[in-house]
Image 1 (cartoon, rainbow, N blue to C red):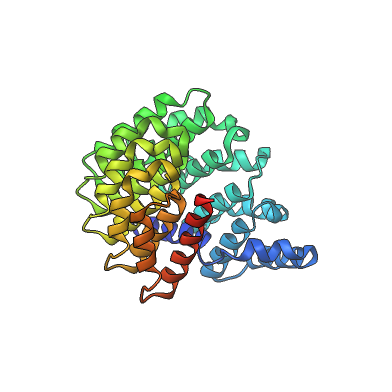
Image 2: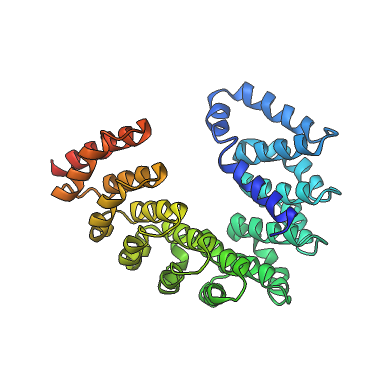
Length: 331
């Protein structure tokens, strides 16, 4: 993976984690919101690239409340720094503005001289949804390029924007068996972006839970999680993969079972075992999943009553919540 790809991955991580509480804070006070957004817009002119990137991430996390920043972010799509351009594309998608300058700016980035910026632009157009249909032809051109990484993100966007998504979902599913790890991981991620819309790919995703790469297996489990009950056909495979050698894979499989919900009840024995996993994240995810499945049977109750004595406070708290959900299910 290139340095720029890592940088863009870090930007995506920042969107999810570092500034996570911001939306709640901004919603609390409209005056504070205006001042916050104005300060972040000013930070886009900072001489330090890292400050500018962080400001862009924060604006994206603010969502619709950051609409006053749209013009500045469109300008930033032409910044000399590739990471700034990519982060701006992702931020505009989070804000959800589908005005002509935004869509046109993202379409222009599909021809960027940086590969990762091009994929970020395609992903952002996908996230804008039907309001970005003007991008269909340029995305089709990108999908024809001799670069599987770019093809994957173009197909993802086309699946979201075209009325008939199945040809594009099929193309993504085929990429799950590509010789390159990067392409297989990208394909799994893209199918996850499509969520239940891509449920026809579940059988091939199930097969990919046995991929040689733990990174790919994690992406596959994450894709199945995004499909919720639409991934019910993966319950058996997800239960079996709770014994994977990689803790991240195990935890993500547990979360996928949680997202499937009550229809994942056949995985309860495997989840009960996972509640004793050596990794705290796996234990927490397994406990959460038992609560989400909500089956007040002996196996679930026994596992959760043990988990409420776990060494980790977060696991204990999750077990208390899950037991409460089982109690509610009995009433």
